[in-house]
Image 1 (spheres, rainbow, N blue to C red):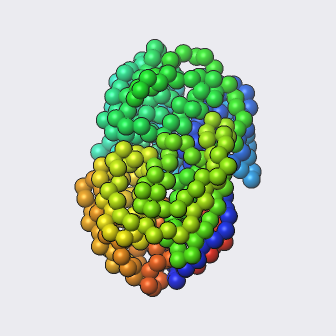
Image 2: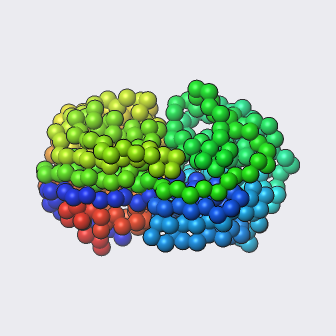
Image 3: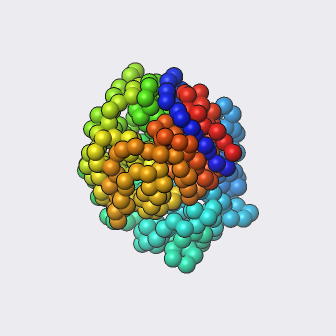
Length: 433
Ligand code: S3P
């Protein structure tokens, strides 16, 4: 599947983006292990989160939906999962695989986790090493990449682990394993990362203890209690209509009901520092998360050196930020972002190649990018099967002097079903071939 975008100039209207991917994964996982029936509105019906739901169905959990965003999960309790008949396919989802590895480490049965070609290249040592310290029996393929095989281990024990990289997936993996471990499991982060697992554990009745950069959970069989809440729109998806409005010659959008958890709003801080006109309206709480409507208007952007402390708080938004930087005046420097190399694609390389194909002056750095804003021409961009690279480069069609073709866009459905229709509704002339 290819996108072709030609000569877009105006972006306007209001929209709602699909539910938050990170929260949707965690919602299914904790609800499956809770006592009682949980119900979520706004569940993301994307391939990644549907794979997580399918994995729990394969372990005997009754899950209904999502129907118009409503997902109902009849929890089986912490000890109620049944061995699946075959490997669990996590598709494209690093979050699905790494968080599930933590939960599976504590089960009395073995399981194999597999993924697609992209996931099968992603590093799993970061979860395997600490899980082994906890007593898990976990092996992977050559190079510590998927498939992951977990065999039933003797009792897990809590550890006190210092994360070598800022990763919410590794932190969450260990907290979830900690539900099944004896004693306390503690994780210290080098920098703040998204805290949805912590918030959600509290909502399910198993609060974590946080002391600065260290977060701990007590093991033990205290049950999780079923919940009902609404999952907010994903700020990582909102990033695309947001940047579209900023870089369009005539742009104004209102994106309603977006999660603005402070561990996710790095994109707003970065774009504002670049001169973006962004306003948060109608701030409120939904479930365990803060939510607002985001209004954005065409802005004269200027390049900045992105503060490194904002990098983990905007980690999935760099494809969109890079396109904004290509439309800004002057140089944008992104550093301290080496984690971008191990996402759904090597995003530093994918962004650099994509921008270069459109005539933008760009330099890939080991840990980031140097982008000089200026004119963009049409061209052909390879998304490397990465949903966010595909969506980000579709926005370039608002500024390029010729048509922009983007190859290999099928994975947009992993996080943003309905992307093409939504963006067309706002005025982006995007065609699918
Ligand atoms: C996620 C954490 C981030 C992010 C990913 C979702 C999560 O990954 O890139 O899309 O839901 O915990 P890392 O933990 O690898 O940084």
